[in-house]
Every structure is written in structure tokens, then in C-alpha cells.
Length: 548
Image 1 (cartoon, helix red, strand yellow):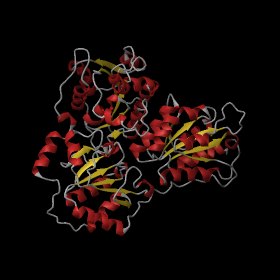
Image 2 (cartoon, helix red, strand yellow):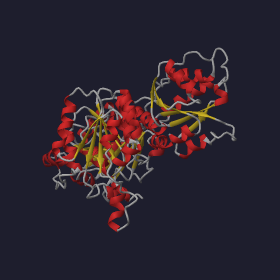
Image 3 (tube, helix red, strand yellow):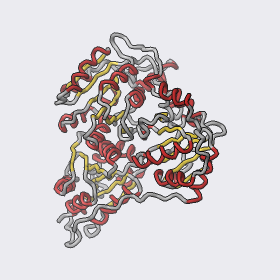
Image 4 (cartoon, one colour):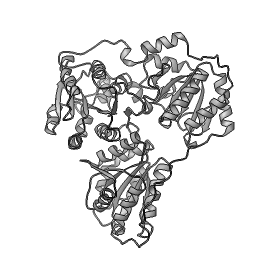
């Protein structure tokens, strides 16, 4: 057996059940070996799309996924998606063929590319060690929550594996939950016992039913209000004390209540500039606590008063066991606060002046209407751009697996591939891709992948014929905008060419076609080319550009 086949079989046996990619000569045998061993392969139309599909699949499934690429340009094409995954600490395996001869036109320093974007490079070095090295790469991706680049030199792939080393490999052990130190648990309990207006902010590290239950129980005990970072949106869906998202996406009421907290606890949450509005959501005398199972994450983005190394669920349960505060203390949980949250915490309940015309819809009106039309059991993939706050906040999600938010790198063009990966991880839900016209056209090749896979997906394009973020950032200063504004594009016609059903939406009446599609039979995916007004920057845009 050749190394390529042995490695493919080993990866499948080690738990890599889903692989995305674009196959060339260098990764042909490896990819086929994984398929033969039982892994599912999805062919993308571009390596960048394949990498993001794998990233989204891993996030929504809770398993390690892989992307398989050709040597050299196959890897460079995938780098933006790999950078997003690495910055998000996604357990992703990048399988890249590699040429080691510098005179080859395919030669690049692939290990250096990985390190440059925060991925971990490793290499298959010999026929004797190939199977063990492949298994170790999977282990590191899972154990360290890392994006790992596994380089497979072409000459090593072609070697014969010695007999006796190709036996079936058991799946790797799952990452062990980190038990918090008793002293840290006691200190956090004391902080919460003193708190009178505590707020919990849960992030990526809290995205599990067990963590949600533990945090809700502790919050009930100490009277805390509940919020999430954008990537964990939906975790507290249905809880009457949920403020939804903390940060740039916060509604005015959520920002007011978070800003009034005397104690903020970040649970598996970085408390970065987005989640804390560059620190403006933290009061002058507020006690800041951060809980994370990675010690290096504590205080990485801002100074914290108390840092606890520990798994979110375990830490919350240990603190609940230790908590000795007055159980009659309800913190912020007053009747007035409950009434305000019920009436005003959702963005769709905040009054606004509709600026739509007969030719273009207000994106708020559009998204509220879609929220009512589309099934509640949904998973949303959102691209980046001026529009992104509308689908992220005006579309409701059923739980923490309802929004796949690939925004750590802030690249546009990833949204469609994100929704494809999420759709495959959650086939029980309607997948919704929310894109700007710029990102939609960047990723349009993957419309073919949606149709080929038969995914009953809805693609919503917020089409203002521009890179809206730049228009609203530079336009007020009088700069020329020729480089970021474009002639009108019939995105619906593009989608029909790929086999989609498509509708152009200018007014609420045009959404009747969406209602008809939802009613069935949904035999083809649907693209909505929504012509939206571009008269203003989104509410979160000013905050976003403060980081530039």
C-alpha cells in the first residue's frame, strides 16, 4: 500500500468523516482513499470555498473536518478560508500535497504559509511514520482546537508502507474538560456574592447544551442577565433574561443594561473590542472576570480582575455548588427589567423610519419580513459587509447552532461557502446564506455546489450595487467612490444560470414568491436578489471602523 492510501485510510479511521476540496494530481489518491474508507467528500468549485465549507461544518457539527488541496496553488487559493479557521480556533485539518524541490513551479514554503495565518504546520516524513503522523495531526487539531496543515510530500506519498503499520486506527480521544482550581472557583463565587448587577457574556467556549444549562442555573441563583458574543448567538434563546448579543450588534436596551453592570463575567468569551464595543460597555468600576480553558486567553484582549482557567460548564457548576450568596438577591432581575426585555431587546422591536422606495427596500423591513416567512428551524451563514448586522440580528435563531459566523478575519466572500458547510452539518434545518452583492459575486462559483448537492437553501443577497462599508466610511468625507460603486447587476439571472429559482425583490409584495417557495416543494434552491437602499451605514459600522 502506498503512503497516500495509508494516510487516507488512517485519517478516516481517526474520525475525519467529512472532507471538502478541489482534487488535482497531488491529492487525488489521498482523497480517493478517504472516500473508500468511508469519509464523505464534497467537491467545491474553488479551494477557498472548500476551506470555508470545512470550517463551517466543523463548527456546526462539533467534529474535526478536512479540506484536501493540490500542492502550491491549491493551498494558496485556500489561504483566506484557512486564516479564518485558524483565527477562530476551528479544529480543521488541511491536507495539502507538497513539492519539496525548489525548482518546481509548484514550490512554495507551505509551512511558512500556515504559520503566517496562525495554523500549525506538520509533515508526513516517511513511509514508516506516515500513519502515526496522520493520526497525531488529527489529535492535535482536536486536543488543541487548532487548524492543522498536514503537508504530504509527493515523493513520500508514492512510497510503499511497510507491512504491519496499516492496521485500523481507533478514533482519537476527545478533548478532556479542564477542571478549574478550587481557589479560583471560590474567588469567582465571592465576586458573584458581592455583585448586585451581574451580567454573563457567553462565547464560543460555551456553545453546548451542558454549558447553557449550567450558566442559566448559576445566573438564576445570583440574578445575572445573560448575553452572548456574536458567534454564540442563540445560546440563551427563549430565556426571559436574555439580552441577545453583546457588542456592536447590541440593541439599545441590551447596551444600556450591559453598560450598567457592576460585574461582567466572560464565559469562554474573549471580551474583545467587538463584544465590548472597544471597552465602552464596561463601566468605570465594573469587575471583569474571564473564564476560559486556555490560560493564554485570559486577559489577552483586556485587563481582567479575575481570571479562571477551566471548562465553562464545569466551572459554572463548581461555582454554583460553592455560591453562598443571599438567594433572595435578584440582581438585575426586576419586573421592570423583565418587561423592558420582552418589549425592546430584539432589534425588530426597536422603532425605525422605513426609508424604502418603490425601487429598493429598507434592509430592516426586508429582514423582518423574511424572519416571519422562513421556517424557525434554520441555520444562517453570514458574509461580511455593511449589511451583515441585519441578518445576524433581525433573523431569529433557535439555539447556538443557528448562526455560523465566520467573521474572525473579516473577509467578504465566505458567506455562501459558510452556509453550505453549515447545511451539510445540520441537514435538519433550512440553510440561509445572507450575502452582500460584493460577497455574492466573489463566491458565485459555489452556487454550482449548492445546486449539485441538491441543498434546499435560501440565498439572500442584500444588493446595493456597492461595497457598502467603504461607501459609508469614506463617502461622508467627500472622497470619490468610483472604486467601490458598481453598475446594477442582475444577480437573480446569474443564479438562474446555475439552476436556482430566483426572485428580484424591490417591495414587500415581491416576497410572495418566497412564501410560495417555502410552501414547497423546494425542488431547487432559491436566491433572493433584494434591491436594498444604501442611504446610510449600518448601526454597527462606526464601531467596526474604530478598529482600523
